[in-house]
Each structure stands twice: as structure tokens, then as C-alpha cells.
Length: 265
Ligand SMILES: Nc1ncnc2c1ncn2[C@@H]1O[C@H](COP(=O)(O)OP(=O)(O)O)[C@@H](O)[C@H]1O
Ligand SMILES: [Mg+2]
Image (cartoon, rainbow, N blue to C red; front, side, top):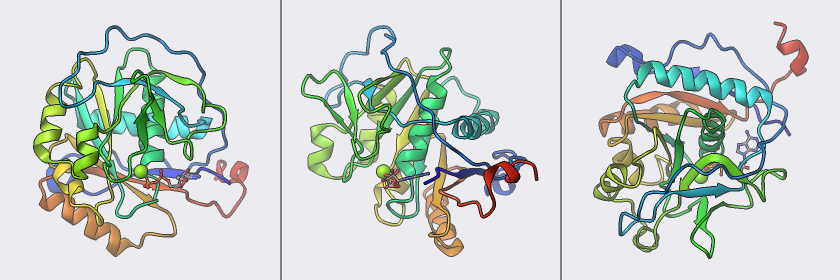
């Protein structure tokens, strides 16, 4: 199986006069290395902003490979060119569940975390199907073992913190806009990238309301599954809610010719 995706520029540029640069990046493939182990302390984790938890180190990232790193680095550059504040909040969502939101958001976060000058955190905003949970000691965030890479499963991802949903959010099953505002104002202090892993746009009303409160939104779309009208409907819903849709990532694209040839075209 390959983990293949494209970072594609999309949409909003014409509407808002800004956006991710055009896809000079052509389709890129992906094999699979991994993230090293070993926690790197990042100073004191901020005191809890009740009723929410504080971000904690993340255990069990994904196995990365060179192509993922290259694509996500290109995506970072694109987002940075559009969002220039000292703290960027970016929501990753898909039109439907299972398209790869959690995977792509985490790949992006892990690639950011490789740069020691950056302080990224993941905020799990999918309260009906969270990908992160806290361990019994409450001092670590654990990625859902179904997702974590074989090589990264037992390791702390250096320089990456995560905030699983609080019990309160899990009980309520809804991520109210006020709750996100409070989180963005408090628990995220000290981080310069806040990456939200959100629920599917067409399946949860939370998505649009979360989208309206972050700096930008990236739509993750599974290649060969989601049809253009579905993608358009999701993007329209987000825009109507006031979101700034920065672009889309095509996940799980399958190359029809061998990768080494593809790269030379
Ligand atoms: N590029 C990829 N290559 C291989 N498997 C993938 C890829 N993206 C997602 N998956 C797998 O697909 C399933 C759904 O992905 P996930 O990121 O949880 O989607 P979502 O968050 O949109 O529901 C998971 O089992 C995940 O490991
Ligand atoms: Mg998910």
C-alpha cells in the first residue's frame, strides 16, 4: 500500500485574493520511513484551562517517508505565505469520514515538529470519534493504535503536543464554538501552530462552526472516492460559515505508472 497524496492549491484565491500557490508541485509519491523516538521537553506545559485539559506530549505518531515530508513541507510553505500571524490555527476536515483527515493533519504536524524552531500542537476536534486519548497518568496523549505507525507506535513524537477532547466535550458530543474560542485563547498559548483535526463537513455541523473560528481550513479528499460535487458542497458549506478555505489535499492517490518513472516526467 502506498501513502500517496498531492498538495493542491485550490479555491479561495480568486475570491479572497489569497491562497496557496498554484500546484507547481506535481503528483508526488510516498514510501515509508519514520519519526524518531524520545521526548524533547518543551518547557512547562501550560496550566490547565478548565474545563479543558492542557496539551500533552503525543505518543504514537505516523511513520513518515521522504515524499510525505516533502509534500508537507511544500504545504507548510504555502500556508505560511497566506497566514502570516505569529500563531496559525488550521483546521483539517474532509467532506466525509474516513478520507484521511487525521492522517494528513498528523503528517503535517509531525513534519512541522521536525523543525525545532516551531511549536506545533494537535487539537482533536472530532468529539464523536476522537483519534487521541489521554493515558491513565493524564500526562500523555495516545494516538488511536489503529492509526499509529508500526515504528512510531510506542514513541513520543518529539516536539509535538496534542490535546485530546475533554470528558466534558466527549459527554456533550458537540464542539460548541464558545468551547473552541476558549481553547484557542488559553490552552494553545505558547504554540505557534495549532492544527485541528475536525469532523467530516457533511456529517457534523461542528465542522462549519469550528471552521469559522480558525485562520484557515484545508480540505482532505480521498482520491477516487469523493466526487467533485461532494467536494464543492463541502467547500461551499465551509465558506458560507465564514471559513477561509486554503486548499485541498488529495489523499491516497494511486499512481498508474511506477513511482521512479513518475518522478522523471
Ligand atoms: N495515505 C494513506 N495511506 C494509507 N492509509 C491511509 C492513508 N490515509 C488514511 N489511511 C487510512 O484510512 C483510514 C481512515 O483514515 P483517517 O485518517 O482516520 O480518516 P478520517 O480522519 O478522515 O476519518 C485509517 O485506517 C488510515 O490509516
Ligand atoms: Mg479522523
